[in-house]
Amino acid sequence: MMNQSPPTIFDKILSGDIPSYRVYEDSQVYAFLDIGPLSDGHTLVIPKERKAFLHELSDESAAALGRVLPRLCRAVMKATGASAYNVLQNNGSEAHQAVFHVHFHIIPKRGGSGLGLRWDPRALDAAEAERLVGRIRGALEEGG
Image (cartoon, rainbow, N blue to C red; front, side, top):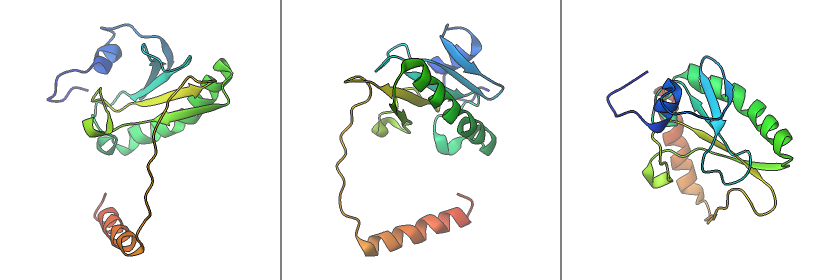
């Protein structure tokens, strides 16, 4: 489970060195309440595979996360009475990642609590879109 970088707080939670409020666990995924929640029920979902970024995960770990996220979202909504929520996942410090172990936030929205965000869309240039599509498809053909 360990690699060359120092253990993160999530590694310490997985090893039992730091306690957590566990809400779900299976052989590949661990979910627990965030100790600095944005709203009641704010839950963190992590793979047991130790990788800093989503694109580094094995297909098996990614699939395990994909299988359990909808179930956890339903449970958080039912438990909190929320009818809306955000699922947030950041990769890299420029994207506001603070703990360098893949993790998803399930953040219920109730009243004014939950995640706030700013969205500054711009127009997509058709020629640039075609160039990007070609580069992304090429990267996929090379194996991602």
